[in-house]
Length: 333
Image (tube, one colour):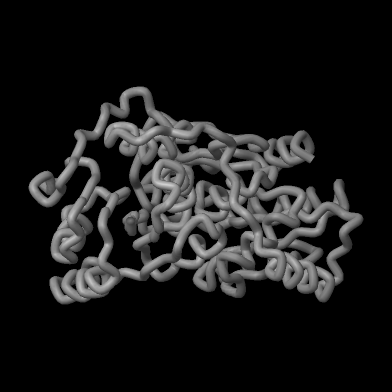
C-alpha cells in the first residue's frame, strides 16, 4: 500500500508531525509512506529512511496550482491519503488526485471530500501540537506507539559540518553555542537583537563560548545587527545551510538559544539542549516537547496573541533579560 501524508507547510510544524508520521509507518509496516510537502521542507523527510520519499506540492494560490499538484499525485497512484493540514484546498487536491481513501479532520467544510473524517477535539486542555496530529490518528483507529522522538543524522553531513567548524577555527574544547534569533512568523516572536548581542557577549566572556548565528538568508541583516553590537564577532551562517546540514550543525552544538521557531523544534527532536524564549505564543502548545530544554516566558495582559508585529510595547519579550537567559544556559551546560 502507498500512503501519502500531507504534512504542514512549515519546518517547525512538520518536525512536530514526525512522531505521527512514524506512527503511521508502525501501523502499516509493509507500506510505503510518502510526505506531500512544500519544497522548503522536503529535505526533512530524506533524513529518515523509514519514509519512502517526499513529493513537493505547489502553494494553493490558484486553481491552476491545485490542478498541477493533483496531476503530480495522480501519477503516483496512492491508495491512502492522510491530511495533517486542515485546509479545504489540501483535501480538494487529494480528491482531484483520485486517491481512493482520504482521511483527516472534518474542518473548513471539507467533510464531503473525505472518505473518513473525525471532528477536531476541544483544545481547552491546551494539548501540545504533537498530540494534535497523534489524536487524529487515534481517532482514525490507529494505534499509538509512545516513545522518545528522534531524527537520525546523516554521517556524511555530520562530517562536512565538522570540517566546516574546523575551517572556522572553532575548537571542540570550548563550548559551541548556536543562537537562532529569527522567527519567520514575524517580529512579535523575536527577542531583540540588542539583547541577543548582550547574551552572546556574556557567553563569550564568562564561558569562553564560541557563538554561531543561524537563520535564513532573509535573516542575515538581523545576524549582522547582533554582530555589530559585539566586540568579538560571532560566526554567522545565515542562508548557507540546507536542512540536513543545519541538523548536523545543531547535533554538534552544546546548546541552542532560540525563539519559538523551526530550528527550536529541529534541535529538540535531535535532543540538543536548548533555551527557548517565548513571547506571544503558548509554550504548552508549541514549546519544546522533550528534554533537555528550558523555556523562559513572561507573558503579558494581552497574552496570548496572534500579532505578527506587536502594536504595544512588546513586553512579553522585552521583559526577558540577557542575564536571566545566561543563567538558564549555565544550568543546561
